Every structure is written in C-alpha cells, then in structure tokens.
Amino acid sequence: MADKTATLTINGTSYDIPVLSPTAGPDVIDIRKLYAQADVFTYDPGFTSTAACDSAITFIDGDEGVLLHRGYPIDQLAAKSHFLEVAFLLLYGNLPTADELEGFERLITRHTMIHEQMHYFFRGFRRDAHPMATMVGVVGAMSAFYHDSTDINDERQREIASHRLVAKMPTIAAMAYKYSIGQPFVYPRNELDYASNFLHMCFAVPCEEYRVNPILARAMDRIFTLHADHEQNASTSTVRLASSSGANPFACIAAGIACLWGPAHGGANQACLEMLREIGTVDRIPEYIARAKDKNDPFRLMGFGHRVYKNFDPRATVMKQSADEVLELLGVHNNPTLQVAKELERIALEDPYFIEKKLYPNVDFYSGIILDAMGFPTSMFTPIFAVARTVGWISQWKEQLADPQLKIGRPRQLYKGETRRDYVDIEKR
Ligand code: SDX
Image 1 (cartoon, helix red, strand yellow):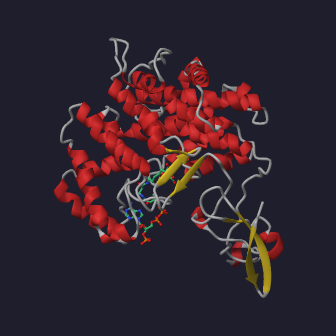
Image 2 (cartoon, helix red, strand yellow):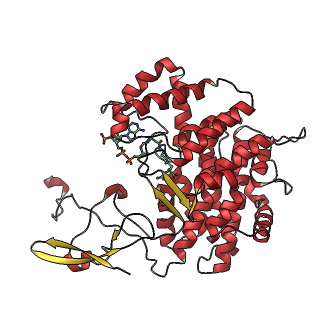
Image 3 (cartoon, protein in one colour):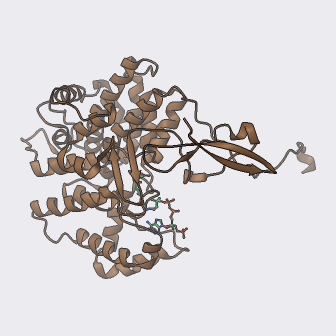
C-alpha cells in the first residue's frame, strides 16, 4: 500500500505516482499505471534503477556490503549454519527446528539419484563439452522424465520439483565432470552429507575406497552457502521471466543455468582463475591493471566489480578467509595464484580508478583458488555455482508463483528503427 506519492509532470500535465515503502532499502516508485495514464514508457536497459518484483528472500545493501537471507547476515550463516539448513531457510522463510532439518535432509538425500535412463543423455555430448553445456541440456531434459512435478499450478508438484532439483543438481554436475574426464559415474551415497556426497561423486573411482577430507567438505559446504541466492541477479531474473510464461520448473532452471554461464555473471569464477594464472607473477600485475583501466581494451579484472556492491562483497570477505584456511590446512603454502590474487586486490584497492568506480573483489575473486586447491578443473567452477544457486532460483520461482499479482513479463522498448514504409519490388531497388 502506498503511503507517499511522487509527482511527474509531462507536457504540462502532472501525474501523482504512488511510492511504495520496503522493509529495508530504497523506496519504489510504482509506475505500473504510467503508460495507461501518460502514454510514456520508462527506460532502464540493464535494470540499474528498476525493481522487477517484490521479494522477501534476500536483501542486499550494496553501499554497506550487507547480504541478508531472510534477515540473517551471510557471515553468520557461513560461520554457524550449513548449506541444507540455509536451503531450508531460503525455501521456507525461517531456520528449521531440529526435527524439520532432519526431515528435510532425509528428503533431499533420498532424491539425489537421477532416472537411470538419463545417463544416456550424457553420451550425446562430446567428452570435451563444457560441463555447463551438459548441465543446461540434462536439466532441461528432466522435464521429459519427471512429468509428475511439472504442473506449476499444483502446490504439491511445485514442492516435489523443488526437492528434486536441489537434490539432483550435485549428481548431474558430478556426472558432467566424470563424463568430461572419461571416468565412470559415481552414484550418490545416502550416508554422506550434501557437500561430502558431491565430492565423493566427483572424485571417487570404483577401484578404491575414497574418503572425503572433512576440511574440503566443510569448505565445499561453505562455498555452496555463499552462492545460494543473491536477490534479482541476471540468472534469477531469467528464471523468473521464464516462469512468468508458465514454463515448467526444469525448463526455467535450465534457462537460469544458461544465463549464469556468462563471464560477466557466474562464469567469472572460471575467467578469474584463468586471468590470475595468465598474470602468473606479481610483477605482471601493473600491466593487467593498466589494461583494465584502458577504455580501448575490453579486458576487465574478472572477479572485480558488481552491479550492486559498491563496497566489499561480504561473500568475498568470507571466501578470502576460507581460501587462507583451506590452503593452510592442505599444506599448500605460498600458492602463487593466491599470492597474485592478494597482491592484485591490494594494488587495485589503492588505485584511484578502482576507488572512484567503487570496484571491489566479488564472490568470484577467491572462490576459484579454493576450488582449484580442491582438485576441480576451472570448467567445473560455474557448474558448482549453479548447484548452489539452484536453491535460490527455486525459492524465487516458488515466491513468484505464489504472488497473486503474477503477470507474464513483457518489457517494452525505445524504438529507434524505420517508421512505416511500403514494399519495393526487387527490380526497383
Ligand atoms: C556475479 O548480480 C549479482 O548479484 C551477480 C552475482 C550473484 O551472486 O548472482 O553477485 C554473481 O555475477 C558477480 C560478478 C562477476 N563478474 C565479474 O567479476 C566480471 C567482471 N566484472 C564486470 O564485468 C562488472 O563489474 C559487472 C558485470 C560485474 C558489473 O557491471 P555493471 O554493474 O554493469 O557496471 P559497469 O559495467 O557499468 O561498470 C561501471 C564502470 C565502467 O566504467 P565506465 O564505463 O563507467 O567508465 O566500472 C568499470 C566499467 O568499465 N568496471 C570495470 C570492472 N567492472 C566495472 N573495470 C575494470 N574491471 C572490472 N572488473
């Protein structure tokens, strides 16, 4: 309900426009009736100043570097919670009781296998296919197998689809990895927790016992937690837009995976580690800083900058601490890539260009260093991001479907093309 109004005057006519108040963050000017009243569109490519929906899941204060999931700060969740508890929080709105958590974890654990016939989908890909390509294909294909959870108008089917996606994404990502390295698929193990199960499916082989390193399992779980949801980012907005047409949940999540793949978004973790490796040594950092500042050079510092954060990304702060811990505990001292990353961060944060443009390390700056130390190839970095973000996408998908105001998303445009003209026969052109 609007308790304030803004006045807009166009061509001498004034319009009182409702201003909506959030529980946190900026006020919102409600322009839903503007076109009908004033025959004008608003213009905001990239949605830098546009709220596309209302939501109660995640709040970001970019100036203060604050990230809350259902009101809980990300640093507290990373330190005290674990991924499936955060998944419950995102999906259902509150931290679970012990019984609720035990039931949720049992439910997810028992949905981790995929339909056996889906194994054949992988065979259609080249072995060197990027695992993200495989995931887009296989997740989209889930709608060909799980017909009993594609009716978005059935609350029970929405719940089943949600649990299937959270549970099966690690299995599909691990299978995409195994397929890419020519190793046999490893089935999930019900005695393992979510993160340990993923590591086991990625790194175990049938020839010997594989014991999950608890340090790596904790680090993996924390990486999942730090990537779980992030308000209306590009891939979440893609899932919401796809869902607004009534598309089934598997198709919507496949669309989110496709959008996440881009290097400006979830693909930045792979691009960042490859950039750090290309820089190679601390003495080459100034050359790359100069390139990042050169308007004529398309190069950007991967893992730096953010549409919303104009301060430290709180996830990057936790990730940096985790990188130090994991590498120390693994005995990987003086990891050259970590040294380059820390020196690059130090130099960039003292550089007027980065200070003026408020460019800080984001969630992708340190994550790749940990994943690399854990034994993952860079091609698996974004699939791991997709595994974690699935619960965020699904939470936002459920929230949108429960919104009585839901309409199909259909933006307009500022048309800059030809006005009407008549067809010209070819002999007269
Ligand atoms: C994620 O939205 C989310 O929440 C995303 C995410 C999530 O959890 O879902 O947080 C995950 O995607 C993190 C971002 C990962 N991407 C990268 O690390 C790629 C490198 N970063 C940039 O491409 C860029 O910073 C973006 C895409 C992240 C943000 O771009 P914006 O908000 O559109 O900002 P912009 O491109 O308008 O940049 C503002 C200025 C520009 O200079 P001017 O045109 O004003 O002169 O800053 C410059 C840019 O050239 N700039 C950079 C830079 N990022 C922005 N210059 C050098 N290096 C960079 N990394």
